[in-house]
Length: 162
Image (cartoon, rainbow, N blue to C red; front, side, top):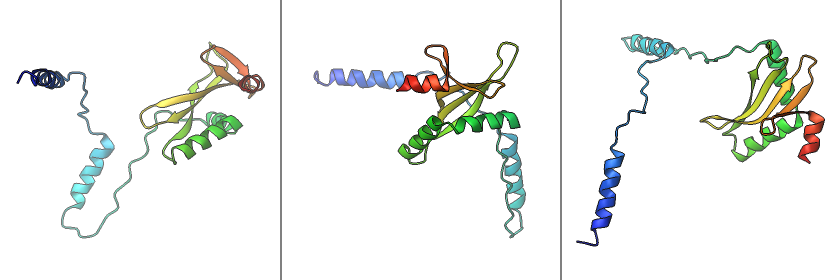
């Protein structure tokens, strides 16, 4: 019996700790409006009608509306060989499950004259940023190195990578 006492104590301690208070967990109580509408339509459709009606597909929800200029800037970044190569590599290694995404990370303001364009991997849980570029009004592209807090021309950046 004495040789099982430490194992029993460890198991009981683990069990007690795992039953701790889960106040950090957040519950989502609201159902999105589109989901409510679809549920109502399905309830109405499930009546006596034997015909199958098409369910309206919810619209994709985008948080930010991209302007034509911003879309062109992101496209310009996607044309860079380094971005294309990394995108192909991630697609190939993940067998199509992971992708690169481009997004506007900052816009011109009183403090800055450039657009920030981030290139990140959407890994399903978060965006892992690989590249940060700055595009100025003359359409020149610079690579931003956040570790060194340094802006490099594409020529300087490419020479530094070799």
